[in-house]
Each structure stands twice: as C-alpha cells, then as structure tokens.
Length: 105
Image (cartoon, rainbow, N blue to C red; front, side, top):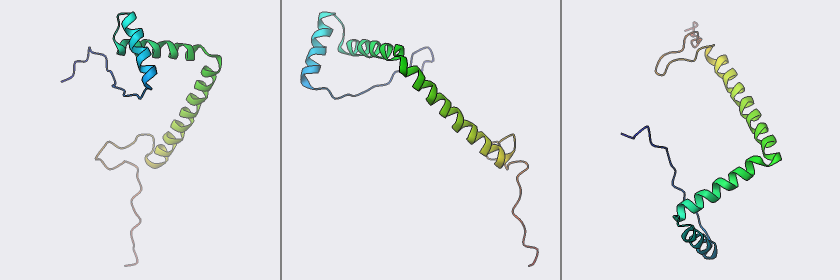
C-alpha cells in the first residue's frame, strides 16, 4: 500500500544538450545540491515568473471558462439522456424509455 502522508512525485526524462547539462552539473556542485534539486529549483523559479506575468492569468481564465462550458454541455447531455440523476454503474437507468415494441407481429 502507498503511504498517504508522502507527496506524489512524477519522474520526468528530458533531453538536454551536453553543454547545458554540464552547466547544470557545475551549478549544482557549486551550490552543494543534487542535479535534481538544481533542476527542480530552476523550474519552480520559471513557474513563478510565468505566474506573475500579466497575460498568463488572462489566458488561464479563458481556459477555465472553456472547461466550464464543456462541463456544462456534458452535464446537459447526461441530463437529457438520464434525467437529473445518472444511473449507478451496472444498473438500468430510471426513467429511461424502453425500445418501442413491434405490435404488428
């Protein structure tokens, strides 16, 4: 079992030119850090600079608005199919119309 108190981490493989890699290694050594810590710190600083850039928050709001529009459309489609309450997994939906029977035969 996984320990819920541990933070989830992702492993990321990136390709770097030899010169950039060598510079990162030297910087990490000069700061008495691991290469991973040096890269993580650089990424955190980059993200913070992007976060404080003026246009990024406007674009982020635009993305959030689009997510909400898509979610609303999907909710409406589910309501149209199943009513206000979607069916539980493995159960027949309530209020669902059955197929018309062929009474002529």
